[in-house]
Amino acid sequence: MSQRVKIKALLQSQQTEIDVTVKGWVRAFRSNRFIALNDGSTNNNIQIVVDFENTDPTLLKRITVGAALSVAGKLVASQGKGQTVEVIATDIEILGDSDPEKYPIQPKKHSLEFLRENAHLRFRTSTFGAIFRVRNSLAFAVHQFFQERGFVYLHTPVITASDAEGAGETFHVTNFDLDNIPKTDTGEIDFKQDFFGRPTNLTVSGQLEGELGAMALSDIYTFGPTFRAENSNTTRHLAEFWMIEPEVAFNDLVDNMDLAEDMLKYVIKYALEKNADDIEFLTQRLQEEEKQKPQNERQEMTLLEKLQFCLDHNFERLTYTEAIEILKESTPNKKKKFQYPVEGWGTDLQSEHERYLVEKHFKKPVILTDYPKEIKAFYMRQNDDGKTVRAMDILFPGIGEIVGGSQREERLDKLEQRMDEMGIPKDELWWYLDTRRFGACPHAGFGLGFERLVLFVTGMGNIRDVIPFPRFPKNAEF
Image (cartoon, rainbow, N blue to C red; front, side):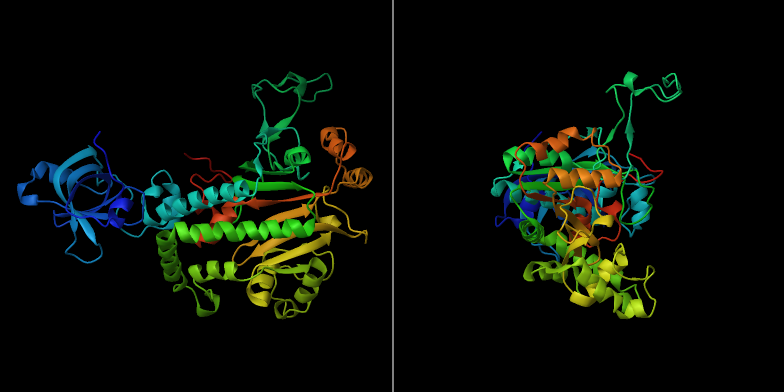
């Protein structure tokens, strides 16, 4: 195979009048003369100029949308509008045909729903090319952020016997023949005969195992797939998604907030610099979408402005108690506009409340702290008031909660008491409690749902559009 040059490099090239070989897929072919070729390295196509008078008509007929080509030719300054350089083809080889009668991704506007049904081909559209290049940059930036700060990347198990949140919404793992499940004398499933000898499930979080690593390595982070068997058919939920979960020994809640804010700003800045073309394209796409909405529902800022705004402003920090007072006195609450009215302290905040605080009241990202212990997990450090815990949630415009974290409860007696109150079996988490028995120290961490971050940075409205192959109720295609 002759050496190919990526289209992105050619479009950025300062050189002309050089021989090049370029390979990619046909996005458009007009007048039997101009091919728009794309190889995924950039959203921009390179124009291939075909000498159609001296090209085999049979070959010309095979140059259809979706076909894979190898083109050798000369890179020259472009005479036309829209590009600085183009390739004058001297040799065109068709690597793979694409039947125009059957190929679904024709050059016209497709609905996002249609593209979800064709998720195996949607990478070939400008929108999804941009999304997945941005996703790639964000993932790289996450690793770079933590590596620059001396964190250890820890691979926590995908198969586990614990349910970190105690929510019970897990996918079970078994190698039983489902038509012949072994039972005990009392008629219960005999898990002793299962592969692991006990009930196991796909992980909902790497946090508990992450804490074990932090108790020796000080600063660790995980970045891997997590699974929730929630029957949630919403634009914000997936059954399989990726989580970033740092755990840091000797950190308190303030350190935790600082780390999370620094990380979010770092990765957004990286994507803005690395994927300027893609984000510009997605900004324009969102503006077109906004024009279809009534004036009062349109966003005040463009995508690009919103991302820059997050970099330029410190996140607003306030307690849950302060937030409840703001929400209680808010116009939508008094006029009964909230779907879930805010009655008072103890209310579990919904997405509409979170978005009001961010988008209407403070008009910037918000970090809420010190939630009532009743609505938070067992491992969060209890405050001296006996009512609240050292929790924090970061709320973003258009998204609501993007990060959830806390200072962890390092005091064994307090942790065991809380587990008893919540009915969490201590014998099953003996290994977790050992970290409080041997060399316990204050520590903190958080979880960032990676897809929600990608959703924010790309301006997309549905979480199923920012993961290559979404898993949700009644759907495990591809």
